[in-house]
Length: 134
Length: 134
DNA sequence: GGTTGACCTTCCCACGATGGGAAGGTCCAA
DNA sequence: TTGGACCTTCCCATCGTGGGAAGGTCAACC
Figure 1 (cartoon, rainbow over the protein chains, first blue to last red):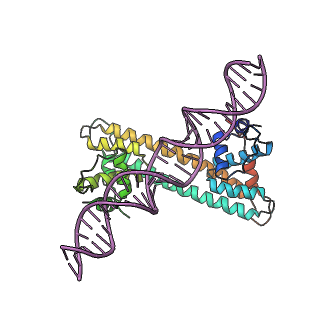
Figure 2: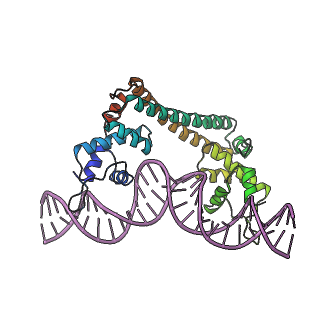
Figure 3: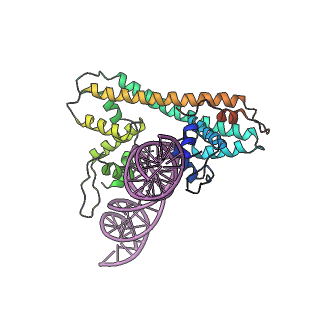
């Protein structure tokens, strides 16, 4: 099948399929005489795998590792689990960071009248926020 | 003061100060004969404001709006609050998205032995995840 | 007055992942 | 045969930040 169909079937855009090939995440697809890339059913599976891993927030580097574990019948599930746990920790750190922002903003926002007067604790709060450098 | 000191005082890198000027977030700083940018104490305040807003997760576009509200004595606090609330909603959406990923990953990870055998529900789970296209 | 090292200038490139678009060639069904 | 949908590569954009090169300046010390 051509790249468009593989894209359709996998949910990964043709643009991204080419990109993944360029950066070495995918092996170079065989070409027709015309230069068109030719894909098989198993390529679509791989693309779906990538797509799912993206949806779980994995970066392309991590996906590269996941793919090679996926393809390696001799893998240890320990390695996969470690990768997943590391990723979970990363995501949780982001959540914590975002929640800290949300908390601070909520506090500021709660103090703001939100009317047509100019005095605003939000702007003041941003202006006075703690130490600058680290 | 020179850009390095302004950077030091504000916690915004010199690189970023120049960048903010380039994209129009900051007005062009006056120059010495040598071409060096010259900053005042109030510029440092502005930079700190930007820095704090960045720390709260605002994008540079939003910071542009915040800055003009900050400088405008005729602002309505309503507008500031609306901006903040919108941003809070954005952050919360991200948190929800991340939490969904975390939940899915936790489920998969919990099913994985994590030993040296190759069978791994995590990889299988990623491989079989629901519908591809949308 | 020199020298010297820290600082400044601009310019280009990089990341992450994705998209847009242009210019040109190919496929396939009617 | 033709036409429209599809493919190719190449470059540019996003967003915020950093790195580095090449060259000019500042200020302190001898």
